[in-house]
Length: 240
Image 1 (cartoon, one colour):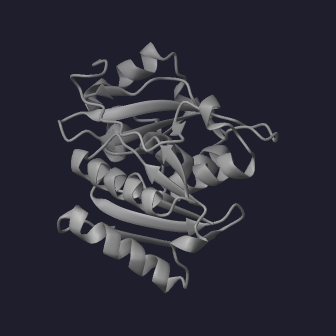
Image 2 (cartoon, rainbow, N blue to C red; image 1 turned 135 degrees about the vertical axis):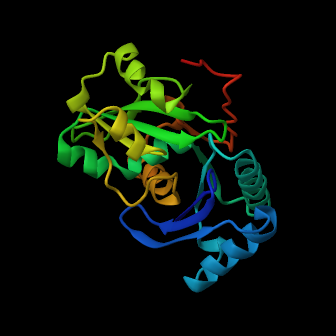
Image 3 (tube, helix red, strand yellow; image 1 turned 60 degrees about the vertical axis):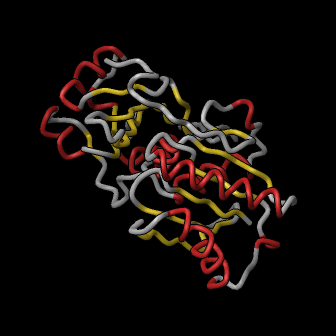
């Protein structure tokens, strides 16, 4: 059984799943100090589903980019869990990849080739990453990262398309400021998914895919066998 956790933005979300189905999911606004509520919330979530950490085989965590405080708190908590429960294996997931995974079915329905994921950087710009969809039926990763994490102002979104040689009809945009993106590029495919922020559902689904298909984490660019914080900031990554 897998539990996935995401706190890269303003919500704490938890998902319980196995390799075949989603068993339970919650998402709650973070109104207090996350470090104070996260462990009790996880324990209550497990209790509500009549299980304990002894029933968990994998812990998947969204490792950012996003809220510095949220990323730091969840990774500290996750490390504590895996140290005290040594049978639980760690899977760290790039939160932009998790967000792209949450829009995968919508993207396939639209028959687009790419997903652009967007997360609020909290510095008047966006963290963006470009993913290509795998339409083959073999046991490969459902999405492949074809760019590094970039940070841009939403007003420069058209330049991002030009730089990455993207055709408008082949792209689905999901995440922060999607409505504004639609106003800037009128014919842009914008996700209608209710999930427009990083969520444990996408993180969990991606981790489940990696586990069920026996994909080596080392062969991905967005999953890790350790909880590795992604503290991307404008000063640290390419500004366009």
